[in-house]
Length: 284
Ligand code: PAF
Image (tube, rainbow, N blue to C red; front, side, top):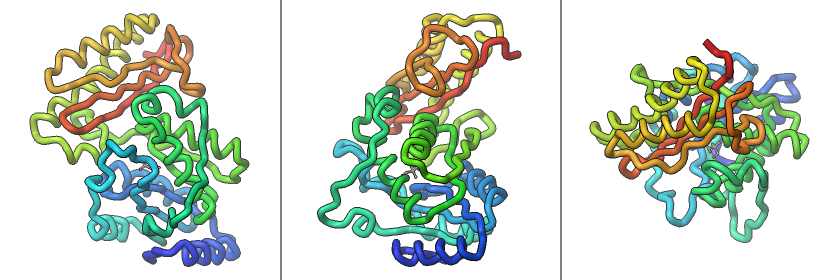
């Protein structure tokens, strides 16, 4: 696996692979890899001839109140994990090269960035859309894989690829969970044992909504009330939002008609955890 730190070297690498006719797959990450990332990597492996993983903790997607400096990092461990997955190149640029002095260009996917996590984290998706655009321009992948756990992010990336005419296939990979249902996330490392147990309320609440829909409940308010009270039963949990929305537009919907996204953000200790499920009318 080649470790590539500079943008120029990454460009040269990709240009060479493209000329040789290779299909390049990219998995963008912020590192501190867990099994969830590795599943994306394995999925991407099958979709291309050459596989690039990027590790870049993007300062532009952290607000001043969020802990950019404290975000978990372990490049050495990540390098070892990726080495075993048949990754061809690890792209890990420095922040000063990605955003040199005088940097002032941003990408904004306006409407999809406003609801859900966009409300609590203003500027976050502008940072994500900007860095993903930069990574696409530098790595020039044919296909890129993103996790469905960050559903809003995935839809924003899909939209920006359409709107800005990137010739890149975007693949959403299903959320990877621990055996007890907790969605894997680098932020789980902030949880102590009790908090980790408490964090299971997210999955429980989503499961409950699924059961209610299967029993015929379609009303959004009733479903959200059940979800909120499930979260409220957990004393360590503080609900940020529970919303039912259209999976494409992310606009709120009043009932489950066809497919609806049920998205949750919940604080457990100092970790803000997100999770979601697609509910479908008539699903058994
Ligand atoms: O999901 C992430 O890890 C990040 O938001 C991403 C897509 C790598 C952009 O920094």
